Every structure is written in C-alpha cells, then in structure tokens.
Image (cartoon, one colour):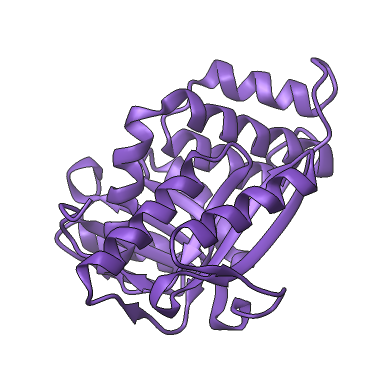
Length: 249
C-alpha cells in the first residue's frame, strides 16, 4: 500500500474514531486483555501486548483504561473468553478484504461479517482466498508537526534499529519493518519521546485496486464503516485505493 494511501486510510479511520471513542476503547481493551492472556502482562517480554498498547495509545486511550485491560487479561478483574478469528472476502469491484475479529461467539461474528459483505455488494470468501495478496509488515506513522527530531535524524534512528524503509510525504513519515524488528524500532522511537499516529504490525497488500465508479466507492466506504462499528471487528485490511478527500461519503 502506498504511503499516500496509508495516510488516507488513517485519516478516514481517525475521523470515525473521534466520534466513537468509547467503542474504540472497548475494542482496544479487548485486544490488550487477549494479548495478556496469551503471553503475560509484561510488554517487554510479550510482543503482542506491546503492539496492542501502542495501538491503544495511538487511539488516545487513557493509561487507566490500559491498566484495567491488562488486569482483566491477567484474570484480576474477570472477563469473557475471546478468540482471534480472521475472515477473507471481496468488496464491491473485486477489492480484497481481510477482517480480523476478537469474539466470544463465532456464529454471531461470522453472521455479522457475512451480512456486512452482502449488504455492500461484496461476498465472504474461503480462508486463503485473498491473504496471498498481503504480507505482514510493521508500520509506524509519525506526523511531521509532532516530531521533535529532524527528518535525517529520525531516518537514521529508525534504520539503525532495524527499519527496512523510511518514506516522507507531506503528511509525515512512514517507517516500515519486518515483524521481528518492529518492537526494537518502536522502542527506539518511544525512548526518543516521539509520538506516533499509528504503530502496528499490519497486513500490507502487494497490489492495489482502484474504484473509479463513485457509487462503488461510496458502497465500499460504507462497508468499511459498518465493519468499524462492529464490536467484534478489530482490524480491516484491504487493497482499495481511497481518495485523499472522503467527500464521497
């Protein structure tokens, strides 16, 4: 996914998140609790937890909420049993879509995901139908105005700690890493007190699909919004090229 499209996706998602912070915090809390349950409550030895906390902080989740989620995952506060489930399918116009969910009821979540695909001109596919089009990469986005370090120094810091690539755009800086190097690069950035807009190991598409029909684009954006609104859905990855301006909505 191009750097331009990555920032566009972030802007689109952030606009929705600002209006539904409570829902986002619930999702982030669930993600943190599951990470703790799977690998322990110490982020220095639990990479998934470190990544989950980074996501939560990028969504401006308060530290008290993060600590509560960690305790819930450790069994100190009780809570449901959730499992990771991944769905694959096609959006309108043949856009490849991967939906990651955390659920305590597979049947409910599968039904919801199928309905959202069908409602917006897409279809739920079999496991593996689109995942081959994506690869996992650590991605870190930093806004220029928020970065206390100049571009050359930031690039040197990132590359010295294992980053694969460093890109600059008018929006900011995009740092990419191999999954195994993500934690080290993120730690170096955090230690330098550099705030991030987004920091996560994500599924990055190898090819992109452009929706030139305005009606198709509108339906696709509606589908993404419906997934974002679903309590069980954690992440949605796709290979659509989104316009910089979301006025189509």
